[in-house]
Each structure stands twice: as C-alpha cells, then as structure tokens.
Length: 323
Image 1 (cartoon, rainbow, N blue to C red):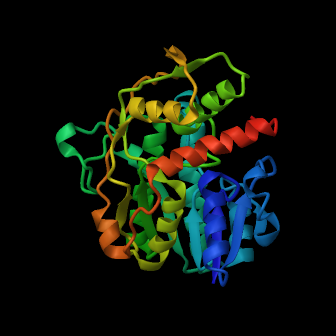
Image 2: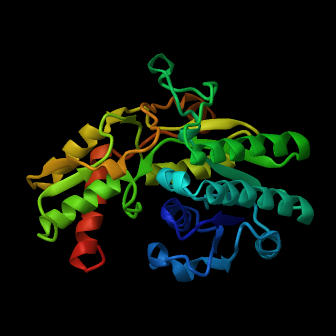
C-alpha cells in the first residue's frame, strides 16, 4: 500500500508519517514538500519516507507527483492553516487551500487513479455557534467567520461535489483543535508554552502576552488526531463528513492556568491587542459520535499529558538554542 501525505513536513503531517512508519510498516510513505519547507519536523524519519517537491497550486507539479507515487491513500493536510494570517492574506489563503485541493482531484481524474482521499477540513467552518447547538454535530449550520474558515468550507464541499460527480473517494474530516509537540508557536497552546519556557529559562521577563481568553475550545492530542486520519481512510464512508473531537471543553483561560501551574513560574498575564481577531469563534465543542461509530476511534491521550509534552518540547528547544 502507498500513502501520500501533502504537507508531510508540517505539524500534523510529520506526526502522521511517524504513526504510519511505527504502526503500519507495510505502507510506503511519501510526502510533498516545497523547496522552502523547513525539514526540522521530520529530521528523525527523513530517510524513511519518499519526499517529492511539489507546489499544489501548480497542476503540472501535482500531476507529476501523483504519477510517481500512484497512492492508494492521500492525506491532504497541506494548507494555509493559521486563522489570523487569513485576515492579512485572504486571497493567498483561498488560492492555496481551494486551488491546491482542486488540482489533486483533477490530477486523480486525469491519471485514472482511485485512492481514498482524506481532506483535513476544520471545526472553524461552524463559525458562529450558538450555545444551545453544542456539542456540535455534522448537521449544524456552517457560519464561517474568517477567510480561512471560508476556504475550508470550500474544500469540504468540493470533496462532496467530486464524490457525487465523479466518484472520487473523498472523506471529509472536520478536525477540532489539535495540539501537541511541534505545534507552530503562532498557535495558542504552543505559544503559551513557549513563552513560559522562555520565562523559566530567564530569557523573558515574567509577563505572558495573551489574546482572547474567554473562547471555549475542544482540544485533541495530535497523535490521537492522526490515528483518526488513518482510520478515516480505512473504515469511514467515502463522501461522508465526520467531526473529529475530544468532546472536552476548556476555556483558553483555563488552558493558560494549567500551563502556568505546569511550568512552575509566576507570571503577570497581559492582554495584547495585536492578538485579538476582527471576529472570533467563541465556542467550539465537537460531537464525534458519528466517527466513533463508523471507525471505533476514541481519544487515548489525556490532555494533561498533551500540555506537559508541549511544554517539555519548548523547554528542550530553548535549551538547545532553537527557541
């Protein structure tokens, strides 16, 4: 069996590659990268996977990649995935996320391939959620509140359309927040952990800068999330959409408090206006019962372990002069 991971050098992509290599050694793992992609996340496995330079927005590049790999599974994880960036670069976000996926689908059609394609959609698609609508089911209205969320709605519905029109075996996974070691430092859990690790190391003053602390989120460990991706392409129903979520709610304030306690440092918490968004999703709590019923998946990693592993990751990086 042959698996292609778009964005293998990224956060989720690198964890998925590690999961496949460790748990499914019969699967040949290939991944796309761009010439400027940082390689740090896959340093330990770089020579165990097939790496192909590919610009997903260039159709000829995608054709060449798929013709080389001829994958049985495609995990489409590559994206412009940071919500605040989508406010500053909406056109780039839409182009990268929508055109990139369209090129994959069209290349699969052109080459006559028949892979199962997992599309990493997002809980951000739900957007403006009313408290009485939680936990959120797949049938909840989509009210996106950012250009990123709009791009993910488009990816989601393209998956549905290509399944209905051409029989492309797309499985749409709406992942709720996932975090863990190697998460980029622009994302909230990793950002707090990095700030606290730098304070603990004496590199920053004992002040932690924050944005909106009242938002309520549903966090899953990335290692549980990528295991869900594998189950999706093997057990889920093509054409369907699935929430992947822990079902556990936590405010960003509580997340921060737990990280501060874990770090053992005393800090002043200071709001930073630059970290506030033009409009923010206030509550995202997912109902993953449909996915659990179809695949048998459930979370295995306690959130306290996720937080500790994330904090320890930044402590180690800073000790090595990389943070």
